[in-house]
Amino acid sequence: MTNAGEREFYVIIERNEDGYYVGEVPQLKACYSQGKTIDELMVNIKEVIELCLEAENDEIIPEFVGIQKVVI
Image (cartoon, rainbow, N blue to C red; front, top):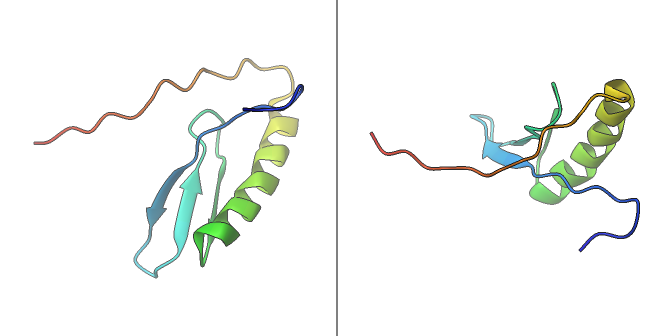
């Protein structure tokens, strides 16, 4: 649950070939970061989210619906 005035974002996390965790916020344009640990990634991504929100200004942020897995 969020406090009044707080916004909630989802972070998609992957591990790259160097072993770093890479996170992306699909609701915000070009909003991604990385860290050696998930904890480090989450600290970094919070800072990037704040910067992305400043850049978005009054643009409408799309609602995050979810992730679906597809097997081919």
